[in-house]
Image 1 (cartoon, one colour):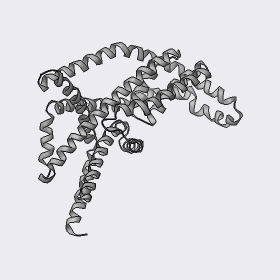
Image 2 (cartoon, helix red, strand yellow):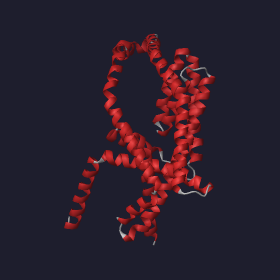
Image 3 (cartoon, one colour):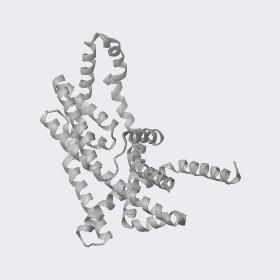
Image 4 (tube, helix red, strand yellow):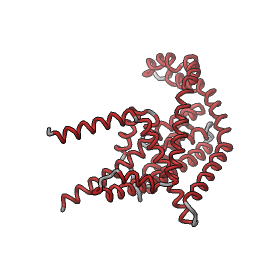
Length: 333
């Protein structure tokens, strides 16, 4: 290894170590970029309809988002609080129901004997007191979210100046390519965010209507969880189905079967019809890339890493596609 390669290797190692130490700062920064792209998509749509400045468009968008948030809070939160309390009262009944079903199956007697130590309500209930210990973590996450939102607003207010900062530290021979890559990433990320938001909203509404039709309790809470976890493809919808299935089991096995069939149909429509249509003009993540990015960032950074894994995977997939296209182009030349 010559001196030049050695210097490059040492530099990369130092950059990696610094990035790891600043991983939470970088996570907040990337989250702000994702939010700013979402704001930018709405701002550009608004400016295409009205001849107004970017500052005024951003102000209008923020006012609309705040009003929509307040409306949703007033409309949904009281009912959600009621259903969360109801869930707390239903859990002991659900655990007893599962134990009684397992007890009737000779092959599962050993499992039934181990359940009292793991799912006994008297043992589970004290765990709620430990939620107080999470207050510090929740406060920290809230501060990160506030900081992320403020950074996103600043980025959305003047994206061109921030783009110039990135281009100013780029070598001259790469400025055009980096500028093009930034455009591609913005288009792909904005399209992905818009598509996934529409998909998640559709799943939330359809699940809510379906569970109300099947007369399953806690329909709003279950639908909200299903809608939010749509942003975590592959594993998210499967995890989200556990709650409505468990609640339906309290009614009857036939209702649980109906809920299972309904959720399977809905998941397949979302995965194979709705999402591909919504993302057909941008970037549709490969399932392997989506799953590996979620697992990797989930292990490294926990829940925030899982939430930001897919936007990061979108950017990396676009960058890799650009790199492969450039490599093939040079090879042909």
